[in-house]
Length: 201
Image (cartoon, rainbow, N blue to C red; front, side):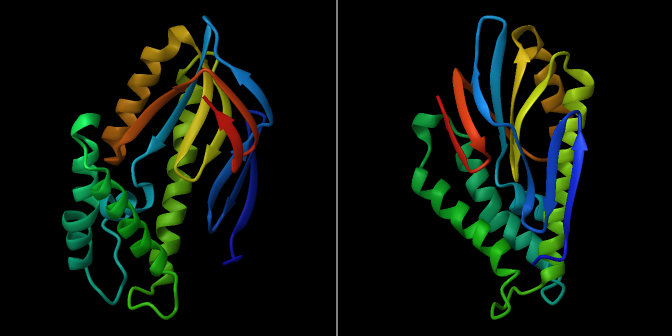
């Protein structure tokens, strides 16, 4: 589990890469204003979705695993999340999220029939490369972009309000490139110590 551990600095941010995922965080209090806005973006079911879009599967279970995982678990949840909020069944959303994540997690558990640590590692590394590409693209195309945090499956950052349309263009490009679905939230204030300790409203 500790076989991969790397730190990279990019645009003044420290990025820690490991077998558990990617983490980067500033510390402080950040507030939206008329001129700047805090944007939080998360990928829906990142690791399960990566396994599906990249056609990964535990070696001993074969390619049919990916088809079953996608149609019977991952897509069931994502289809429910695509509905308007008032029409969603949260039991399906939460239950199938646990099922999707448990399958990924069990692939790294020796006593599970899903055990294949290479499958786990390929998905984790792909996720970190995806987050890295996402951050780099935002820095390249969004004037005044400031990263607050990057976590395993999402980003929080500040941008000038007039750059919001450009953020949507980058999001559409990333979505088309990867097949992943990204959800947006906007905060008025964020108080953060690290990626695991913060309050946002």
